[in-house]
Image 1: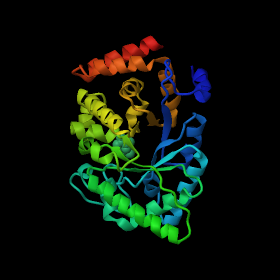
Image 2: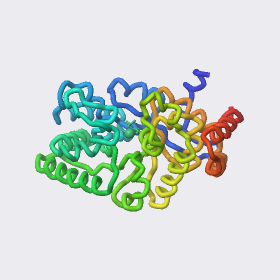
Image 3: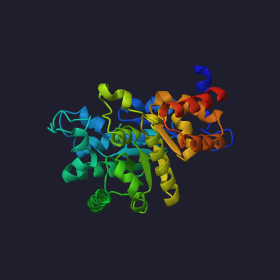
Image 4: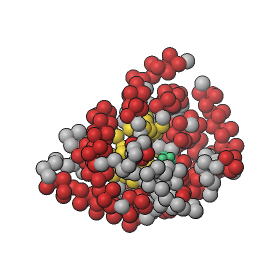
Length: 324
Ligand code: PEP
Ligand code: MG
């Protein structure tokens, strides 16, 4: 079985009826680069920049960040690398920047933190743009966005970074910019977001946590963290419909992208790109190549009429079994 998965590396992630999707990897460590490439990843769908920050002893300088980002962009070139701006807070505290909060998941996380520290944000944006010089495969992704204002504030900083770099003689290119759809409020803002952005990436880990009010890391409520809860399925379908309507590319970079049953459903909804850990990639490709897109669309229609995750999973598992 493993050997046949190995052979998949060179084959496209395409359904029996020639519907093509893109399979990418999630990384954050330089040591993840070669496993991603070995498994045939078509790029990085989520580069978690907080990881180099967490393993440092103090805030990495712009120069230190530049060197790391440059390496990742170069290794994957010409494939795209989606670099997410710093997403600390919540379950990812910085050892050298302790923050005391009663509700860290509802607190000073992601873009909320970086917008309050423009000097840190600007340094990171500059490091990314410099790393992209002459390569052009950088995509920028904003975490924990909950309002349009945050996106506009980011673009102000991006313009500032552009100006300062140009005056220093750096050749800067505008990278595609997207947001993580992971705070439920963004679901209802996609018509305002669409003209501002080039793509969206659904973060099902946080979206599920916030939609169901279930802490993603609390064992006492782990049984309520239902990845295919009918409300989650409807939310995902709504995002896909909205994105399609507004011509936004949708990708998915939460754990759900490594769940074969869920990928069937998401592909049926129109999600074009899936980003996961390198280890899961061959299996997901195998599943995609064993079904038709038409079948996946039918599964979505059925799932939207179901009342429980159990019922939805049973239907998806039957399909997976029949597909072999
Ligand atoms: C998510 O929230 O689904 C996600 C991919 O980001 P993270 O797990 O880093 O919060
Ligand atoms: Mg998240």
